[in-house]
Length: 377
Image 1: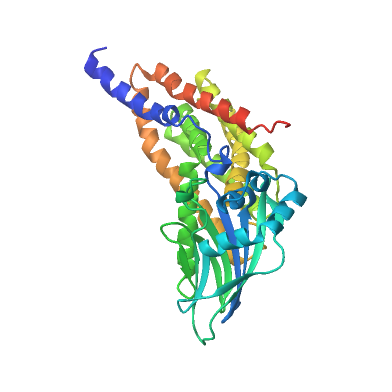
Image 2: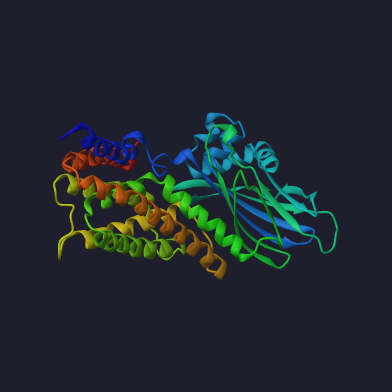
């Protein structure tokens, strides 16, 4: 083939192969400490505000600059003891990073009782309850700000604080991030809440490399737009079902089971492409298998959101917005990659291009699979 005819094929293969080849590192699900989510439940009226914070235990102890015996504690009894003896350091760290104001006047925090420890997605979280005393004003508005676990501390990156609040008759949820660290009551309509969780869902799909790899493996094996529509619909329907059920607490499957199986699902689909069995045929395997794997990925999405809240319409709005963010981002990825794959299949380089894109996916997924299998200490 003349060089000018090979050039587009080579460029397309480099583009499609760059994603798995460059990102040879654990996905966020595998590298748990790469990021974290803090949780805050805020209630009250006027001068009295109560905040219940759920913060990842070992990260909290590291950020408070405590010794290894504190942040390495694994048994619940020892974690509770460390929280008691390091009460001042923990309180100091949290109150510097999390604030409540009333008409822009800071409210004074007091840690109530002893901290507790509970497990979220197989990870220990410290539960701390603060009472905030605000200056006596009538008709004012509250603001909630979070700068917990910033990038500058170097322990984690891209921390998000999910706030559920019921203040001054205003009720809803919000996601506080470094670019948008503050929530003001009375200025947070439902549409804004939906937009925040939409962006959170989109961000999770983009940064959740295992889900992106699975989608890429599906696209490599789909030769017609009809195949893409069928498999994407099956994947969407399946993960939407388990995402909603798991996020609302109806279904609870340990991450130690879900995460290795997600990695295995990517390997299965990518190997099918390498063996020439990726193309859909009438009565073929793709739709039922993709649906089954979609159920697993939905559990992974719910684990990332990590909402532990009783049923409410506000919760449903947050979950649906998060899921729509995932779906729209998924459609964008398909719209960008599938035309490139279609062009590549029209060249004589199509066969080795499948290998060039699928092998890195298998390699990375095998690493995730081994890394995610819990091993006895």
